[in-house]
Image (cartoon, rainbow, N blue to C red; front, side, top):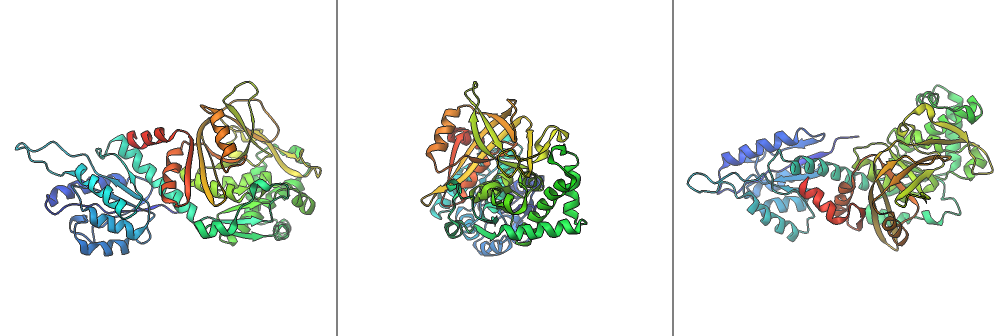
Length: 471
């Protein structure tokens, strides 16, 4: 993935020391260049690399036209009107912060008035209707800033991924699945999200072409990956090759059509036409960072892009929230037919490729394995009657009873509260999971997406506020 670009526009007030402000700016720039992002400064535009003059706003806006976020460190009181005009022009996520002030000089003089200026800028940004993220006034090496800046970069990644979403829709939703209905026109009008439809026949022809070629690079790589698993129950080498060819065909069509996620009608028309189930193929695609979503779940694909970006493009999985643990009241089974990525298994050799045991066609392509233990974030983008929300929750993947299909048990603080929120909100049983704790990032990203409401289960909104406040 391309690195996130952050435009850094340090600001000062002309009644304070230029030299002192420049020293603060250099400390800040040195720190932020340690992060995995591209930093653009204004050293070539402003005296001392600090925004202080009205005539520089348009020049900076032109230089920062391609950034994904704007960082405004106050190196003294700052120029609240200028930075607010700049932020209003760019219309990108904004980070407001300033390094904590030093002790007064021996004669009692205050040197920078940084906190004072941040108060002023916060008010003026609101006057300009500019949403912004705030990190508490703190030293540049403090926990609030070091963790907060990293989270802000991830917030920018989520917002960019959301507005860049283009989904390859392979056929219609399965007829019984009224729950995955999506308003394609509204998604485009409201958020700029594009859906590019193709047919199952388009996919079938591409898969058959790859099977005839055999020297297709993605096909060969998928076969090699499948050979690391236990595919003895799939039935034949030809069946393994079909799984690999389907994966290669879906990837090729996704990229060929400029898409960054796909949603496929996985049953049962596919089984009638192609004699295959795409579960294992989907899992292989998600290992490569291409969300491949079951049951033509368009909203699931949008969720996947957001969660993947929040977690620095770690491998995600899409699952059903299937059942409560029979005895442990706060444990829930996350399950699906076999579409989880093998890299999420503790041991890839224990991943079992199988013949489908759910549908009458009994086609190859299903898988059975459990996922590793560890911290999770679970999310779901969904909408109803023009209102869209993002359910967000953090959990812990734990050991639990085995089952057919791909599965993991999760434990949450209050499953009753999760269940109530999911049933009464605009949500369904599908969710996206990732092995990371990124609720704070997803929550903050919603600030920059008009028309999308963050809906956290846990951490609560107060706990998320504490995360940004304390680092």
